[in-house]
Image (cartoon, rainbow, N blue to C red; front, side):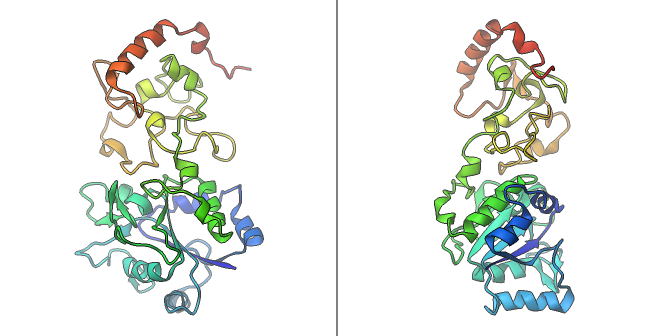
Length: 320
């Protein structure tokens, strides 16, 4: 039996809703097939008041083994480092985190807020929010750069707004079955099995990307979303087009630009009007190019690609 405790800081519960929609495996599979015991979850837990406090203290004091601590939402430290803007079970949430992280065998941060601070940590960040071990791309966060769980690992980061449900459940299974050592973490402590490739990998619009055939409208099934609508698929690490959402689709397949929500800088441009769904350019060249490409090569490639664009690249390939 593997005990899992799920807590929530400053969050919208989006990752909880995503988790409950997992399919491979489902949340129920975790319990029935993989021996996971959910000690408490903000949407599922039965304990309240004094009973919940006792459960948490029993984990801290070692009476109940804490195998996996899952945290959703940012860590609120305001005002003045007290964390009292986010109280939970009669204590600041950050105080529970401090104690529980010391006894947990593994700690998993789910969603952008828990990994990098997310939207609550945007400037001017009045709540003094941070992620568990990162603040945006800067190492440290709430637990510090040197933190390691009892299992010897840093916080395992599963970013996204929200994170894909199967990313969450598959990492929980890897821990529960003793195979977490098979998972390689990148420099941001993300599992490479999900975050080594780019969102563009598997995108049905790659042929349009190659020929610089663009679309300027949401929902269209033809044309690339990168050139006009600010799609960040070529610069974002995720498996959204390899492990489809609901096993059916993804943002780009539905005609919606990737917003780069698995990267520490999300939300980009501080959500300023005219920047989110519009590609920023200089003399027709996007300010931000796919990783590994320079502006000179891009300009040359654009000329050649547009000249070689076949007529079918402008057609709706999904027409029945």
